Image 1 (cartoon, one colour):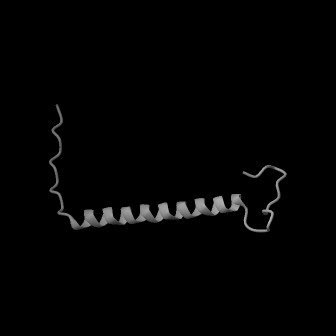
Image 2: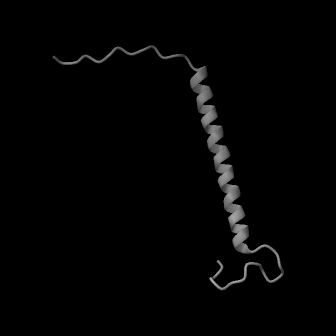
Image 3: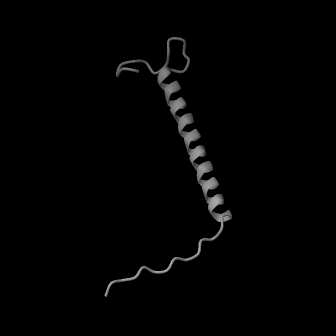
Length: 63
């Protein structure tokens, strides 16, 4: 992790470990979003393709 006075680039001018870590987190986050969307779409397709449930009668209310 970079300290407050650490330079923004590595000794050879390449990307820093902090930047590499940030890009890795962005990639993982994007993959999780894609996975969540795929699961949601699959769930919706199953619900729409399944049989329609019969309506339930209203519960009896005590008088």
